Amino acid sequence: MQIETILSVVVGSVIGGLVTWFFSWKYYQKAGDDLRAETELLKKANRVIVFMLENPQADFLVKHDAFGNPTTTMVSTELRASGKATASFHS
Image (tube, rainbow, N blue to C red; front, side, top):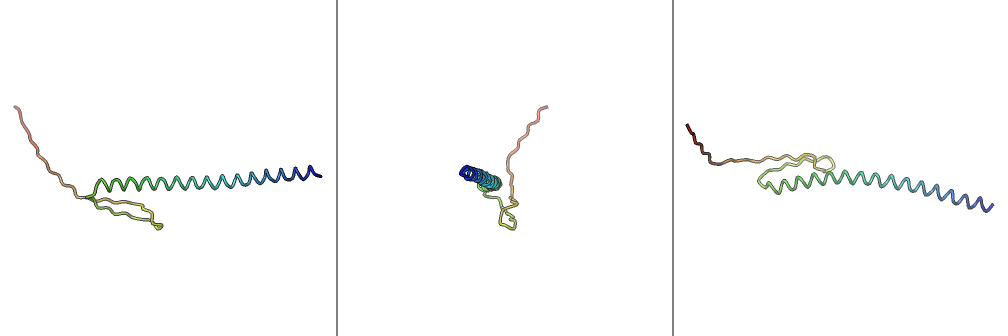
């Protein structure tokens, strides 16, 4: 009878360990996917911030979704050109 008890404890521990491992693995897999998605949003935001810093003369309009996340950045700016041109003709 003692062997049945030991076997029962071992089998229960193995099954419990497998169940725990499976749900932990699924949880951390989902957390990793969420982190990757958030990282992509942050990369896009960083690119926009750098563009804004490099172009202070531009006007920016940022549109947001229902959760407050930026979805679209519109940029308008006024460009002026000046210069000097010379031409020479040889015949």
